[in-house]
Image (tube, rainbow, N blue to C red; front, side, top):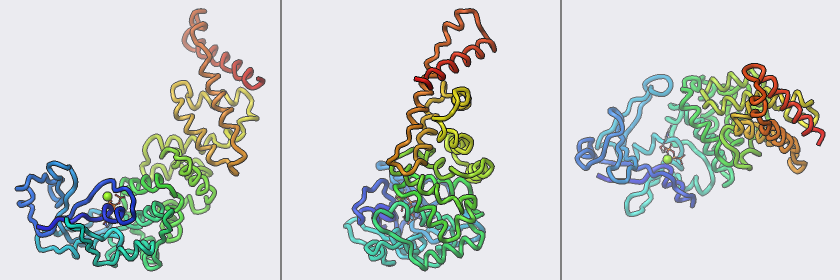
Length: 367
Ligand code: ATP
Ligand code: MG
């Protein structure tokens, strides 16, 4: 049997980027041989194994054929006869279809090195169109490697457009799509992900609500530059949309709870945060209560950061941020104990506490 390093590990080493996880490919082996060597199978009907010591993934060489709509609609054929070239041709991009043997010799039947040097993201074969997820993957790689000057090949973009127009993107599960979206948002140029999706017609299919929301791309870029969290980036992307649209996108991709929550809060409150310096103390208090800054200070902080990312031009700063932080600190500092000691409880206590907080915010405003 022959063992090769494949995919991202080969690509990123050639790019001089850190390699996070290594994918291995095994050619000329049977399932029985792998198990005899102590490899543990990952799943019952998938020819992938875990190395007993390193825990890294070893996949048997395989060919794939499309047998239905969407994912799941794939049949695999793994056998010792499948060659290296046959395995590599089913991969998405030429830069992802290179292999390296144990001596460090590069195997590159689809000219990935050439495309790597020319900074081009190019599909390996027409079979690219068989998995619509590849449209999102290409957009994600475009976002990741934008700082290196990569662009999508014209023919690949054309193919991506065909996939978008075929309606096949609708067959992707929320989970698979979100995984790509999440990884793309966390890249250094996440707005490129959206731009590439837009340029091939996939944005219209996946997130039509964002078609005319180009300001949010600037905001998203700011968020990446400031190393903001996933939730902040997601909320930046959806900022400016109507509440119903935000909820629809959240649900379409089953975004994690903290992402959903922050995006909805941005939709409802961002404008008032921008007006924070002019808000009456009662309005300020209403906001703090709604955010439950007493028990969820971190969420309010992410909200403020999202609003700050939207403030342009940046060199004018965003004094609202400090003002809102100060207001939250002021409201939180109101002590409930004296009120309880005076015999209040239940609803009356709640009302009194609110009144004290309002008084504190008035003083804060006039300080
Ligand atoms: P990353 O650095 O993001 O992990 P990667 O290239 O290693 O990048 P993986 O998702 O780990 O990406 O996949 C490993 C390899 O498997 C890819 O390089 C590619 O060759 C192939 N691959 C993964 N998913 C697909 C897909 N949907 N279609 C075609 N090939 C794929
Ligand atoms: Mg990988």
